[in-house]
Image 1 (spheres, one colour):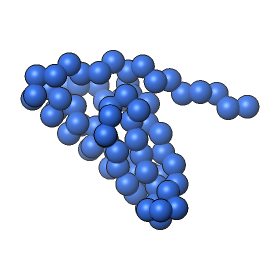
Image 2: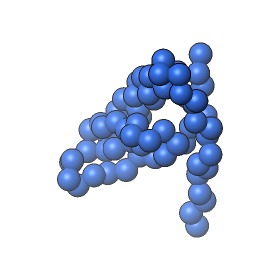
Image 3: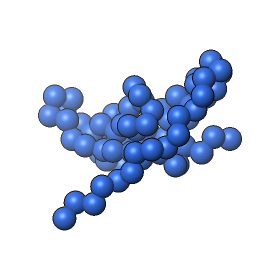
Image 4: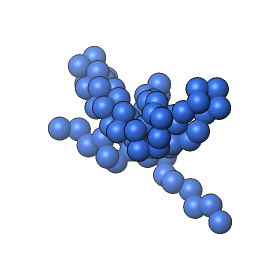
Length: 73
């Protein structure tokens, strides 16, 4: 089983989409949408699982988790 929990997830409001967007910077193109931050995170869990499975099925190397949260003062 691949550890999707090691990747940073960013969640932000999108005026254009009128909802919350979740992205994983280390997994290009992997994103999800939700009406709340919690829903976006739940959808992102599924998106990351599918993204990592597709990567493995195509014989590609699973990216290292490199992006780290930044402290904002």
